[in-house]
Image 1 (tube, one colour):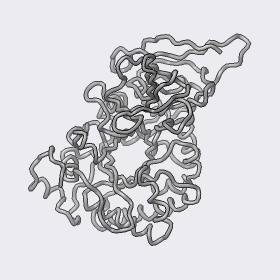
Image 2: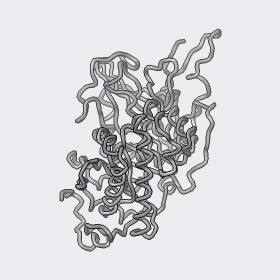
Image 3: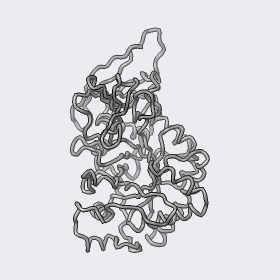
Length: 440
């Protein structure tokens, strides 16, 4: 099979002229069709949908789409403050991270009062406290094996959520192993029951959310008892990124939708495979939020896609990580592959390859969200996006149908039971609206 790259013009729904570089497959008459080349690549107002043989659920969420993003409490050290979050384009903000400890000491820091103000000014914006994260992954298993520990965790987590005036909890355990998966079910049950108790006793029946950051890697999701977990969860936030990095032997795609069967090393994971697993094992697609990266993963001294590399490079703060707002790097050429649902840039002079999502690929993924009937989109994390018309968060919302297409249910703002003076009525009365100072 020979491959060649051509340019194809595509004018998406917001009428900005864009160019897609399509990887086409030239097949000899005697060869069997390659699965990556079946179906027609159709230019539509939502996205390119080349995998026309997929089963589609084009129904939109009854209560509107979810537009969700993580906000990192360390972002202030990079001059990214809460007033920089595009709250008009978000329905949920996940505030990261609260730690898991063996004590009952509070360990959430940052701009809690400012988040309260944002909720008051934007009543459809819900803020969730995200607990865990990759760097805290070792803390989960040992602490949560015992019934008493899980109960204490649930009580302290819900109390902290209510004390700081949030709308729910996001559990980020990366990742339960097969021997601890049963603990995950028991943990979610304890937290859900404690959230409901808090709701009935202190919030007039307001429903507090419980979500989970779930893996798109087969070795991680196949151990999960998803149908047992699902009864306690409002949303599954699919981390459909980080498919490649320093742990792989050759360059590949970090957030591709589909596998590349002709060159499988470039797609060690695929979002579509993960979605199929979850929906085939008891999870409604309407509860799955498609996670997307606002960053790229780099590889240096490489001949390009699917090739060996020497290192991942220095990146921006973290090795091999480049924020979307600086991509593509100068002189790098961008390639977008709708058959794989992935994009990347490559500089032939510096030999640097970066896998990241372009605006076109975001539009492509909106089409996927629609055809699969998913709940919406999620981003890691807000400080990495561009501002203005090239924002990926903005692109997602625009292609979903604008802010009118988003969820409009109101957040909870009465936390008079809190041990802090953060009932928003008190905050608005006593706090000067100084968004620049996020210290306590």
